[in-house]
Length: 236
Ligand SMILES: [Zn+2]
Ligand SMILES: [Zn+2]
Image (tube, rainbow, N blue to C red; front, side):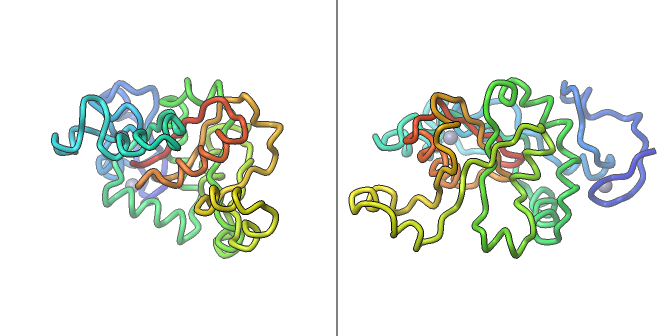
């Protein structure tokens, strides 16, 4: 018998969604909770990994969605985020799960997904530095933890918190005006530039929504000399 990490009901492990989906692992959730998850499968956008089966035809062009095409058409952003892959559709159930993690501090709940994440994204995590998306210090203080960092730690021991979210004042102070203009909207800084030079970076976050957070993070890394930057998230 195991206990569902979401609803805490006991369940037997003899059933297997993994076999059904051709995965090597399954979430540590009971049957009824697992059934509410929608795995992203089939055709996806080559960059952001969104499922095309849930996406009207007029918003895609070939293998790309229009959001990604818009980013890529802007010279400043071309190729900045190489690709994102997400495991599940961000549906109502997963919204509840993530709210429970973030706002009720149930960080253990990430462990429910680590077997599936680890096996699905093995090829990504093996060859890159795992960098979680940081919270602002204020937010982290309120919450007591950064969910992206805990999520990353549930996948591997080698997590590198190399990004920092800066406050407005910090951003203003130690930069030239030109620098300031260029980086005006980017909330991220790198804490140790030497360790990212020519490296492949894998950013980790809980959810990919508009993609701008991950792209801003990728941008500072790229500008500081990282080789390529991809990302994985639990939900998309
Ligand atoms: Zn359950
Ligand atoms: Zn896309």
